Image (cartoon, rainbow, N blue to C red; front, side):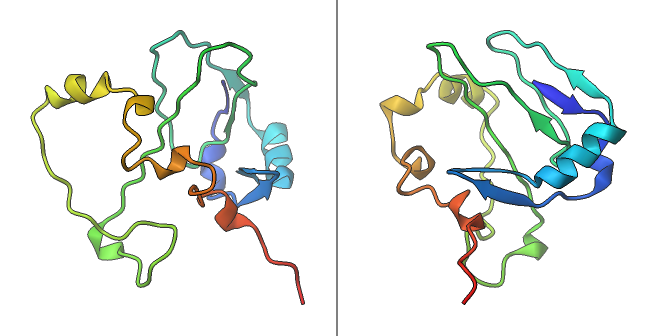
Length: 137
């Protein structure tokens, strides 16, 4: 994992669709490479990394037989509820649960229960494809 130290101070970088995957605007990435130090984070299985959502980051291809999972959490004030339906979810109150639920639910594998995991099904995951621009007419 490589992080461009300080790149989160550049502000939000637009993402574009490259094939089936969304990625940061290559022009802005190249500018960041010239201005910010690249910091490598060597991680072991089970490690977790938390960083600012606007920090530019990249990872080499996973050549192992084991899957690499990532989780992106985004929080938004209920006062900023989208005014219409879109790929961003509407406000949903959070239900507080006991701390031991982390261990109980954390051991559950997504392959065992595909309820409410549309993002695992390529034809249902519209998050990256929502960036695809229609051809100009």
